[in-house]
Image (cartoon, rainbow, N blue to C red; front, side, top):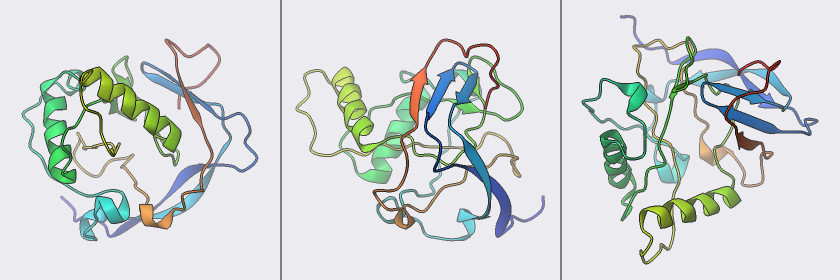
Length: 202
């Protein structure tokens, strides 16, 4: 096995400023963006060789967890044993009093199925402040209908690679301290049963 590189040069798709109709349609096994994206050359540095990175300062961190899971395609429901393990990891990393799973997904550049999504190759954030507030209240009340509520919350993703390196579509993260609160453009996610014919998956 060859040693890990300090950095790689690649391209990432960014929404162009003139894009006006920005929707991401999501269906089992397929996704389609109506926004206009352009590829920009970027340098991606190996986080495992840098750091340390913290959630408070950078918006992400590196962690380790061993899971005895073999059937990954069916491990991501919010009621699975793996979801409970993810909640335990989240509370350990953040010190949260409680964690509520939303479920997850597998992304694979080589295949798709109703339980496997294509890569999300564009620079993006999963939540706006407004959607995060709404979703947090919804998932909390679903899990704890008689609960006392909460003073603050954090919404984040826990990613793990399921194939040996080097991956052809590795996860790239932006240092949160380099992004202003007022940056970004809304790209509304629309969940549908299937993508209409004549479109190409992402």
